[in-house]
Image 1: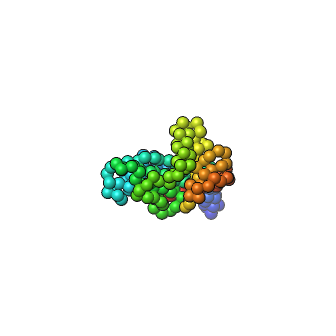
Image 2: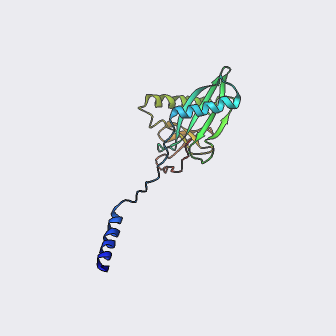
Image 3: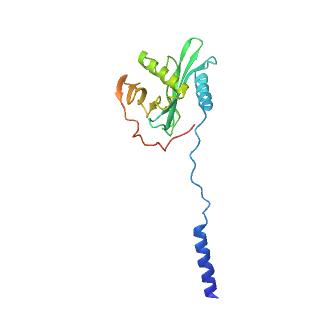
Length: 177
C-alpha cells in the first residue's frame, strides 16, 4: 500500500510540473487613444482657464528616438489666438501633465522650432517619412526636433546638436493616463 501511495504521489508531482500554474504575465496597460489624450488635455485647459472657447491647435506624439512612446504635446488656441500648451509625459509615475502654459504659442515659438515642427507634422501626416520625423522627448528639458540624419534641434537649448537615437533602451516603466 505504501508503494502505491508513493507511486501516485510521484506521478501527481511529475504531472503538476507539466501543468501551467495558471498565473499570467503582467500585462502592460494599453496606450490611450489619441482622442482620449486630446480630450484629457482639452478638459484640463478649458477647466483651468474657465474658457470654453479653447480648441486644440497642434497635437504631436513624442518618442524616445527608438520609436517608443514617451509623451504627447498639445497646443491650444482660443478666440484671441494662441492659448498655451501642455506636455503629457508617459515617463513619470506622477501626473501626466509635466509642463504647460496658459498663454502663448507653446514650446515651438521660435522661427526655427516652428519651421521644424511643421516639417515634422507634415512628414508624419504623409506617413512615408514618419519613422524619420520623430519628435524626441526623454524627460525634463530634453526635447529634440529632427533636422536630418542624427542632427536635431534642441528645443530648450535652442541649439543644433548631434543625437544618437538607436542606442536608447526601451522605457518599461511608462505610466499611462
